[in-house]
Image 1 (cartoon, rainbow, N blue to C red):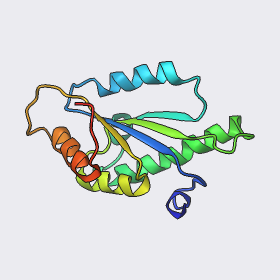
Image 2: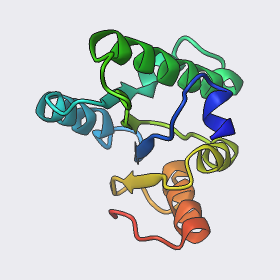
Image 3: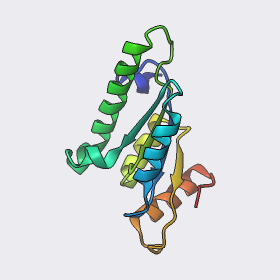
Image 4: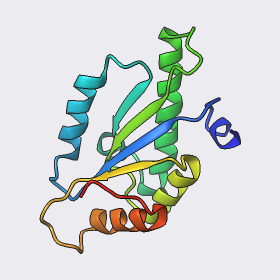
Amino acid sequence: MEKYKEIGLSHPIGMTLIIGPNNSHSSTLLAGLRRTVTFVRGFAFLNMDESLNLLKPEDALSGFFQFLRHQHDELKKTNYDAPKAFRHAVVSNLPKTSDQMERLLEFCPGLRLAYINASHGDADEAYNLAMEFREITKTNLFL
């Protein structure tokens, strides 16, 4: 619980990350999810490309955690009677690096990652990150 308190949350949340090569339409998938899942209380959606344009790469994670805290505060305003107003975040285009992935796994050990396969070759950074995630977590990805 302490790791959640350090960014201003009082309870664990679930987290699903959608990554893929450039032009793999991960943001389009997020937009579709946002439209279809908005009625489910406690879900938050973020396209990190929108935020990363305003941040230095080394500040991306702190910006992400600020977003989580902001979403939690906003949901609590409208759902103040719900003990867990913010339950799950769905994020596209983060993590970008192995360091970010490790920090997110530390923050949320139940992290899920969906990789969108696009024919850009095995040298793509997103592909390598997805393979590293699969190795660390011993889980299957959507490939």
